[in-house]
Length: 155
Image 1 (cartoon, rainbow, N blue to C red):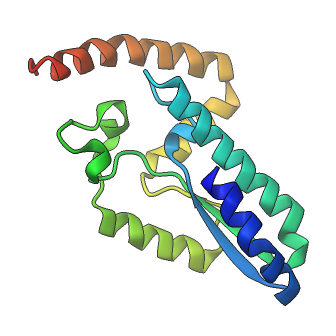
Image 2 (image 1 turned 45 degrees about the horizontal axis):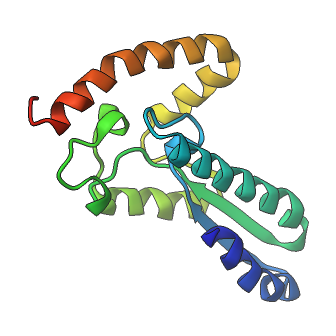
């Protein structure tokens, strides 16, 4: 709900000025999914949907909206783990993600995707949903046993 509370707090002033910029942080899981965590995926999908609604509803009011959707980032959230399925394309440093954000805001990009492969995955998902779901099921079959072994100390 943080995105909703923030929008409620700042939108009236932005609309009155006729300009403003909202950057919402979500996750690649909001575009794709997070294997093994339905609640995480669901809330991240909701964050992207909310950002879309803001962009559609308030774009003509001078409000710009971007949403940051990284995969694994080297933060306390993944400390002590190998990043799980989100780390399949590598774990980025926060400074590198920040550079992507700066570029995305300068270009007024709606989806800021620090991990370039996320765009390809998202396009594949959109082009053939059934194939994408089957591919994710195969990926889950491979990654879930590995993740269980890592948590048991067997990598």
